[in-house]
Length: 385
Image (cartoon, rainbow, N blue to C red; front, side, top):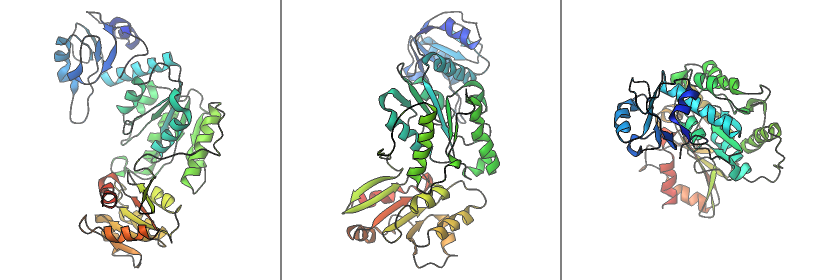
């Protein structure tokens, strides 16, 4: 449920937002973003995306007895504001102040979810964290507004796909610790260059109450991804004065993010959630090339040099037996003479029987690719055999 830290009247909320134009006061018990469930005691906040604008439901919601924030000149049980999203962030900022939880923002080109999940695992029930895929401009306020009243640590995963995505957030919200996991050349179709990626993500440093509480994952040099992540986590714990020993810390990744599936006496390494060249190389190199078969799909949104970056991955992993799929890998693999490379076109062409035989012989199988490659569909062919 989305809520304020405590029930407020609509007039009290209007004072916080700086728009004292309420005609009909009401008690606000919860916040809703879905007009279909709005009822008396709710505050409906109409969000606007690329292909929709929930402002069209404002009058319908008012008739149901709910209150609204709106940019339309509709008075009654409403607060008329200049910008709905800006007001939403103001509500979030007020909840952060009232709650007093330690706030941790995480961003980066990759590794955000794993760090978030590791922190949640360590901090337990007193920690509230972003749900999967709730890391965009709407997911960030959703995470804050769904935070229970007794939360001691709030971990917010922050994703950006466009220049300026964090500008308003950095102006309105604050955090106690800010983590940058890494900078890499993904989403170049919108960012254009890596400098814009870096500038956009580092904008969140402006949220820090103490500018020294910045954890830069790029400074932690460790080829083992788990050990590097532990290094990031240790810095966070130190800044928050949390005494925990990470030597014996055991972490089980969520599905698609490095979880291990036991099958036919061996293991499938499930990295299917997403992929970037840096993480493909780093995570694959943790495995023994003599005992691990790689199944790789295309990596998306790498810009004009996508072919070169795919080729670089294959060169780094030349000692592995690799099965490839996707248009980019198909084109690139034609230029590389390596007896370890194999290509398959689709499910019918997928070497299921061969991989099952190798699993039974004790070899591991590692899957990775971008979301658009849907590598989990091939993994499932093995599991559901």
